[in-house]
Length: 86
Image (cartoon, helix red, strand yellow):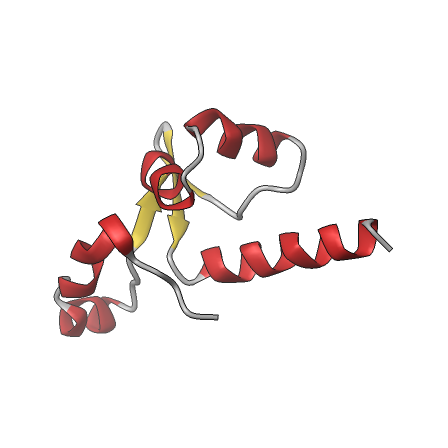
């Protein structure tokens, strides 16, 4: 699955060598994830409360989402919907 970056294009220009040395990958805030998906921030929180949201990493009071986890999570949601409609 290929991610359409849209307004998150700035993530492509991060210093990839630096991130690789640190073994880190870009992360999204809840607001950035909601913008990418075209939904309200509360929709992300509601999905997480229902146990259907993306895996997040708590950093202080904020939750961050690994960019690589988003396509996996979306695919998993798609599979759950497909199973429910059978």
